[in-house]
Image 1 (cartoon, rainbow, N blue to C red):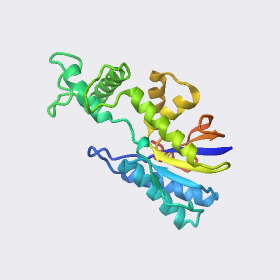
Image 2 (spheres, one colour):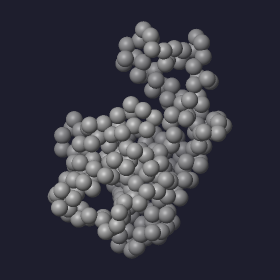
Image 3 (tube, rainbow, N blue to C red):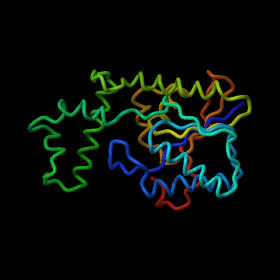
Image 4 (cartoon, rainbow, N blue to C red):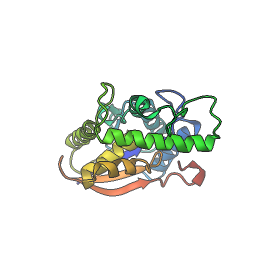
Length: 238
């Protein structure tokens, strides 16, 4: 039996459409590497998605693993684009003309001169985001730049099966990815419905470890979810 670890990236700064890790995100990733070195946590292969926050998390993990004289994987990190996150920005852009109507709940949501305090604006944006995700899940967005939810879930499943196919018996492999991809893997292993799948994504912690076991490409079992044993300071858990 082999083991697959899906690791969420560290906290991102979200200062651009391709955000780097925040300073806290860097700390989280290094803490994971130090923890792995201290415990002799070895991996036979490491994969990463194509996003900067995924790549940086894997890089910082390996840097601290090396500095702690931990067991390095025998091969360089392999990038698999199937572990890219769903494109939330494209979904929001597609939904904005439909949801931000004059006099409606989300009127002036993106106005820089809004009279709302920051907390109220954040809550209203969260409602806007939830409504946009509902439209996406329902297959109501047909813009070219928006990947349908079922296509996203199938893409992640393809990536998981590819990693399983490449792994030999008794191997331990890790993928540095994002919350949506982790929840899509839960969907694959547990048969979750679409709405539950994305609700699970909302609770995935930064640099958390979700563990699966498998015997073949089609036999995936969840063992552990959302573990952060490397984050001893509660302030680092985001």
